[in-house]
Length: 269
Ligand code: BGC
Image (tube, rainbow, N blue to C red; front, top):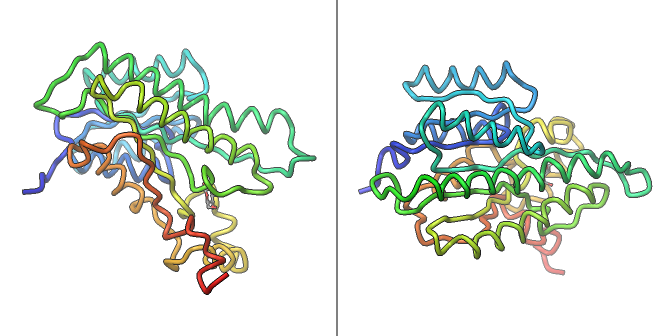
């Protein structure tokens, strides 16, 4: 029988959870019984609103400000999680930004910001989670795994993206970081996996989703014919965090309506 609250007695840290995909994942995990740490970078009000929404439905959550690219701030994020809820069982490393420019125009600052948040941020959070999982030890009443890490990547870990080389490089980096880490810590019972979302309607691509021409162009790249919602990604994250996926290690789930299937070829090459 499927569990109604598969994450009961577990604690999830979700980075970049004040909006978009992170927010969707945080709400779904709270609904599934987890206490959730809503990490945010600058949107304090939005983060507080997510916490309030969770508490109104009888869940547990706190908001914690931290820049995931900063070593001391990431350490504090995990300290605050433990202070509030006693432990951490699940990390969803979700924070991601775009600073788009063609290569001749791309500044070092745009490059460094994207690598700093999207790739270094995932390293710092994953390292903090692994260290904590090791200190906590296994508790099979909560989960068969010692801990679970879910990296949020992008279809652009696979699909090259002209005009966004910094972003694509960061996501390609996540792929091999995730698989190397999964291989390294699996024997301890830590499950590391990733999700590669396609075009999900959030603030990051609002301009393309809201402009009629850009939206039509985006839709032409999605065989399934619709732009995704944060809930589409959240359902996959919930599964990867729960014991239902206990034998899934080092995998990337593409949640993209088929965007990664070379859609230009769908009517023959
Ligand atoms: C990007 C979005 C884009 C989508 C599909 C995501 O990773 O952040 O801006 O719409 O990939 O190209």
